[in-house]
Length: 429
Image 1 (tube, rainbow, N blue to C red):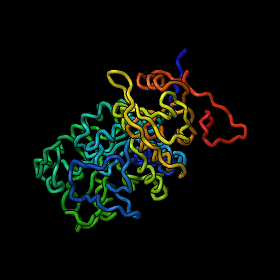
Image 2 (tube, helix red, strand yellow):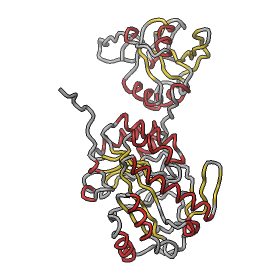
Image 3 (cartoon, rainbow, N blue to C red):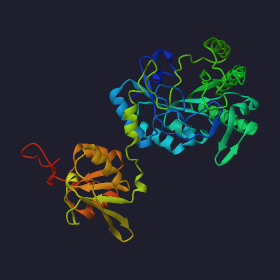
Image 4 (cartoon, rainbow, N blue to C red):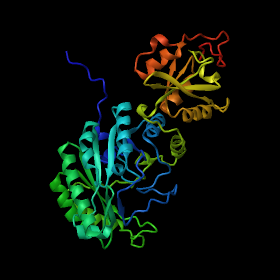
């Protein structure tokens, strides 16, 4: 008898950017985790963030991968029609590869049914394509503005490859080579590819048909011709924006080669909601709040364990009553106490637990005799694992540092006679 598939199947038809028929039914959230960019486009200005402005390259806040996961959870609580999690800057995802890949891994693990999507200039995506395929990143957009390096030299001020900066035709030629190689690799790995082309009057507006023909040869699935948005303080800031009529003619020519996307809303890097019902402004406060959460360091970068103890031998204090923590580490000669740290002042509700998460930013766990649901949730999201237990400190440290189960150490929870608890240290929560 076959084993049932416990992971919800991903319905790729629910990607509203690639399927115009569902743009009013399913939505997307862009996770702004990639602030740096590796090319300088002469139409791009990411310095300004107007709440009334919708264009690529702008965001109200930048998230770390763990903050992005928390934000994703909160978005889905309020907008369950979200089917796509994407990374579209505000820079380029692969000028920020650790943040990008860390976010994708976290989202895939937490939400296995979610469609994962990326938008990139293609310069540095190549080495990451095999893992993108493993993570089932199903849709990738590459911005290709020309297939002529001489034209590219007018569009791009510079191209960065590691620590080397290229300008002019040399930079444009390198970028184009990387883009073409990336698209070939993406298609070889079974990934759906959309190409964005920014139409710049007098620069590349007569090149779009050549772009479409080349992309067709590479197996691209969809072409999105986007009218230039003239940004202040840019080289192209004084150029006119192509009219709807001009764009219609350009798309008609390109459509001889590839299907055209005509419902693009030119999304911000922090866009959220349906294409027909954008909720970016509504979620701005949530995004900002998540951006203030303590950033989580990997366990390997957290050498310590915090302990709530009255005398330094037993774990015997509730988190809420602890006035200080002992900080322990594991050395060559066993466990050593490093220091004591005073806990944040009582009161303040959630803010106290957020401050405690920052206080324990170098600790992988905290040993306590009891802990409430809310502080447990907040500490866990900041990367500090709450461990409830009774007994010797050394036993708890051994369990945490050696990755052993702690069930036998867990504190016995006692229900308060009056139904409430003020954190008296008796195991109540």
